[in-house]
Length: 355
Figure 1 (spheres, rainbow, N blue to C red):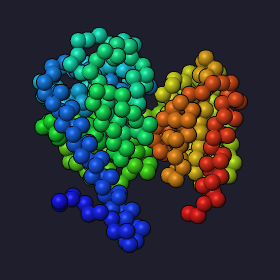
Figure 2 (figure 1 turned 120 degrees about the vertical axis):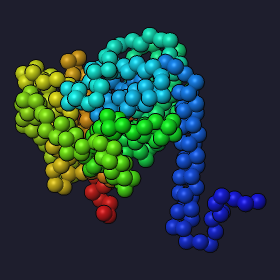
Figure 3 (figure 1 turned 30 degrees about the vertical axis):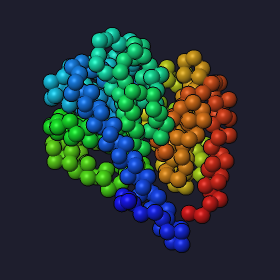
Figure 4 (figure 1 turned 90 degrees about the vertical axis):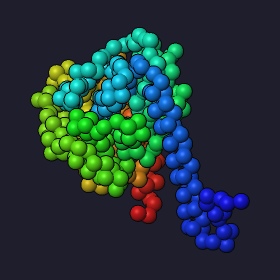
């Protein structure tokens, strides 16, 4: 019987056997992805009304992907309601049709399906009314789970926007300039400006495709990274005044009073952790934000070899290998002790291992 891949030779070098196993795993994952995409296209083709949502506190990948899916559905003659539990952050409100995303706590059908983007469960969307809908789950986080009726999870995708672009091609949708702007935003933000470990040759191939379709890389980068509010600068100053370093580990924090004093909003906290992880010699960092109810939100970052998503998952959160988050019980001192107890052994093992 012909086999798609030869059985590994027992006498072959271990590296060759490992490569053969990796090829088989990749082929299996690709087959599952192709099947999921085909099923999603079939559901879209049969339906008329769709709900599109993403996680609460939407980031650039969430907003850009939602907008791109909405545009694709419109091209296909479908009706799409774009809804999130939290409003679109100010920095992304200039994206094409961003005003079409509505903030609400509950959704009301009827819908033929709900498309959830980068959620590891219904609770991440924080929307009531999803429970009885047909669920299409599209995610690329390491913490992604099969909670939907159709699940397409690709840990290798640099952004969920990359997956949306693949769906567009499968559905026969056109890559318009407006869609390209939204998808480029997902790529730029979820790779940390092309810095995270998910960045590879295919990432730049997609960036090239989107730029050819009309996305302006310079304009998009300036809109995202050069549009800082005065409140965020004041908040950053407060956070930097707390900065601590312990070998390859760094951390910083802000209190709820800091938020009140600087008139900062939740989105002003975005990216503060990067000032700690960018220090020479630091491999992992955490930013702690005290919430009004005295719980503490943690943002974790690493430069590549430390999987902060695994740490966040142990504490009830999730994310990417190099960028993750979770919320733990306060007070701030207790939360700091808890996360340092998780990070110190991992960072210590990294420091002791050969590079």
